[in-house]
Length: 131
Image 1 (tube, rainbow, N blue to C red):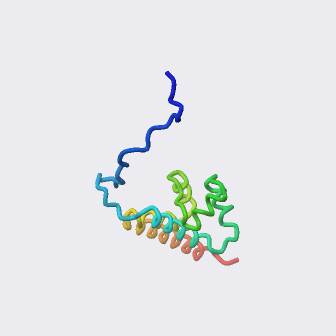
Image 2 (cartoon, rainbow, N blue to C red; image 1 turned 90 degrees about the horizontal axis):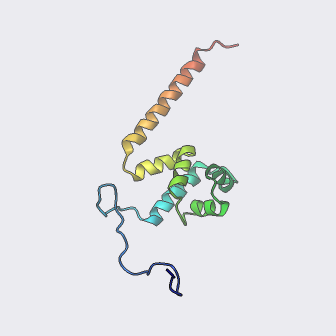
Image 3 (cartoon, one colour; image 1 turned 90 degrees about the vertical axis):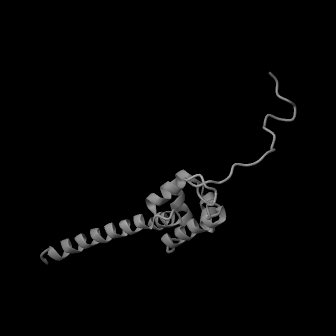
């Protein structure tokens, strides 16, 4: 079987697939640009005092530094696997994801658990005799 001289790709005709959420409906209100801007805002607020934000994030994710700079500027959003790694390292990114997903109860549970941990740390410090 030989391919036609024009190329090996499929013709670019027809309709595209609709964007759907988990329930099958296509009324997801967050567009790609808004999503990229929310992730960029989370990255900026998490690492606002760092001069080498792009290098640090590139080290976390293994992504190219230029790509990371585009994430920080909000031009593009990270792909799924990079987004998961960012959520592992950044509380702000995780908060943004949970908020966009409409899962505020998980956000609140995470904050309560963090507060609980800090209370136990404080109780441990207060219980120590001074030297």
